[in-house]
Structures are given as structure tokens and as C-alpha cells.
Length: 285
Image (tube, rainbow, N blue to C red; front, side):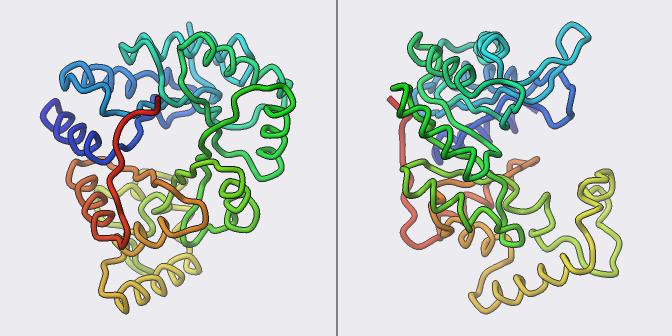
């Protein structure tokens, strides 16, 4: 476990990717990944080479009770807990994981602005906001003189391109970096799933109802068309997805869900082969 962690961490140092400190299960404690990253950062001794990001807003379990949302109290409390688990004094990018219609936007943004003023967070960002919601955030920040979010993390893939209509152009026009997630649609766009063929043993589709529901015939036909396009370009489907996703309007980085070091290495190799790719260094100042 530890050797794999250090190998992966060194790759991420080189590529300037971001970490996130939550777990997949809704209602989980949401702390395991932050603790792992905290240990890795201390062992590697290269904090300045990382951009460390985490999120707040999803429901987590605290003292046997569910907590979540984007109230000022919850944002401040979870920031303190994240810092402790990460063994850091400052989070580079703190995301609002999703909009919270139960809390006034002024309260949410004011809490992030306060954390930035206190030096506990360098920048804040959003995830899962649509174009209208993002525009409201930006307008309020400008009106109140609060720091704007610096990044957006939307769901996006070559078979889920809704963000291209309004959201990605807005991000590009307003100067927000974009790091989409689900670019492989949970593994669907790796080519491992075929129409009429049972999912490979040990693959995510064998134990994920969410993913199994995505493997409908129409989706797999789209995947087959993308495989043909990849072949025309002399690429594997994996490499084609990485490079083509990076070319989408406004996209500046990609989130690649990896469970093994070799998967991360493959993503890095695909990026290095992309025309015009440059490794960029350093945490935000």
C-alpha cells in the first residue's frame, strides 16, 4: 500500500494534479483519503510541489449523525477537520462540492472569503454548478468584493457533453480553470465493456449498480464509434479520450479516477503525447 502510494504521489508531483479528501459513499466519514494524502505529503517532504484540494458540501457522518451543506458553520468546521487530517496549515483549493439551495449564497461565499482572509485557504472553487448558478456566484462576488472561485469541476465526457453548451464557454470567458470529472464515465470509455459481453471479472461494473445502469446498448454503440475515431487517429480509446477531453472549450486539466499506479502512469503518458502539452509547476501563491 505504502509503496504504491509513494509511486503515485511522485507522479502527481510531476504532473501537478490535485487531490480530493472525500470518499465515494454518501454518508461516510469522508476522511480516509485526506489522511492518506497527509501521510504521503509528510513522507515525501515536497509540499510546495503539490496543489492540494479538497471539498465540502456532501453529506458526511459526524458523531453518528449526517452533516452536510454549505452553511458557514459547516464550511468552517470541515475546513478545520480537513486541515488536521491533511496535516497542513493551508488548503490550496477548497471546493463547494455542489450547490446548496437551503443556504443563502451570501452565507456560503462569505464563509469561503473568510477562510481565504484567515490564510486557511488560498483559493476557492465550485463543482456541479450549472451556468446560471455559476453566473450568480460570480456576480455576487463582484458586487461584494469577495474572491471569485478560480476553478470549476463539472461532470463531462465525450458521451456527456452538456457542459459544452453554456457552462464551459462561461468558464472560459470569465477566466475560471476547468477540471472535469467522469471523463471515462466510470470506465465505460476505456473500452473494457462491450455490447452483449459480460463485464470483466473484477471490473467496477460487477459491483456498481450506478455503472451497470450506464451499460445500455445505445451507450455502448457510442463507445464503439469513439473507438473507430481513436483508431483513425492511431490511438487507443484511453489515449483518445484523454487528449480529446483536454481540447474541450475551457478545459485546463483533467480528473482521472485511478485505482492503480499503472492507470495513473497511462494517463500521464497520454497527456505527454498530446500536442502542445506542457507540464506546469508549483502551487498557487
